[in-house]
Image (cartoon, rainbow, N blue to C red; front, side):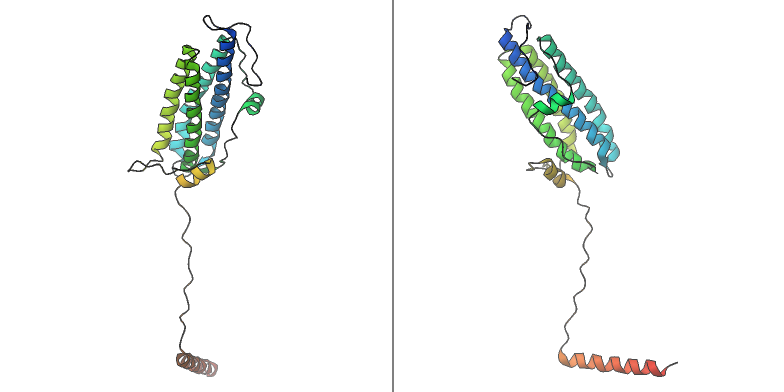
Length: 224
């Protein structure tokens, strides 16, 4: 049971108190994940830069609003089950099983590469919660499935910026947000200038060059 959850004194008709508590525990972590995602989306919204700035900046606000609605529905379901939803930052940080989003000010496409991993994590956890809830409470199962419809669509929007014409993702194989950001970001590094190599002259040629240099220097000295 999560630290902030307590055994309910009542729950919805048709569920026992132990079953209600199991569903509350499931929804508590989903609530934290959704609140965290909404904050992460806003963080990215504020920190994107580059030529794709406005497209990504404006794409994320509707996603943020929708995710906040998902969090609200999860919290209200916890209350309906007789539980106490905790939406404070302290509860989120204390009970979550993941770290903060790790990319700061960066190219918009780099952020999308990292955000794709964020969506993958929350979708996988939501799917596991759907399976667990399905054997206990079909109402909560249906609620989480509805969340998944939106979350998977939002990930599709993100991946459309990362997908090539052949259908591969630029951040494929990345296991961390930083790695995904590096793989997704366009290469902007300027080509390094390689100094020209000096061509080695044979000894006879070197003597000829030195004699010519001496003659030039002597002529300069006599010229006013």
